Length: 160
Image (cartoon, rainbow, N blue to C red):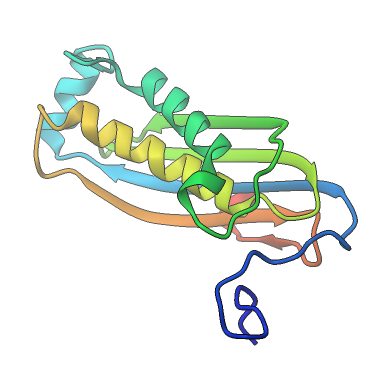
């Protein structure tokens, strides 16, 4: 059964009014792979480019995106996000690891908000670093964990 289609086959927002409000949490991750020379330059420049501080700007952009997920993805419900944290770290190989965690008390989960936050943070890193290289790759965007709904989910990676 397709959940976002009404009885007459038209697209429709799922009715969550009968669901209980529970604490919902989700964490998503993504990776931005920078070429070695670009990663070296970014480190040498104190993680900033001519556009400004790369990681701090990505955190702000990702947080803004998580809060506006319902405006970007048609059948996401507007949620009152209570917490959104984005952690960004550069690994030794020059890849940038991004994690976005979102929390809300609501009737529907926050997985899409966490995924959107991580993805937009990655796009922001790309945008701010494209002057260093055009060979940047955004890869492996994935849900690491979710809790508070009908079923919980956690990858092995989320436990580390």
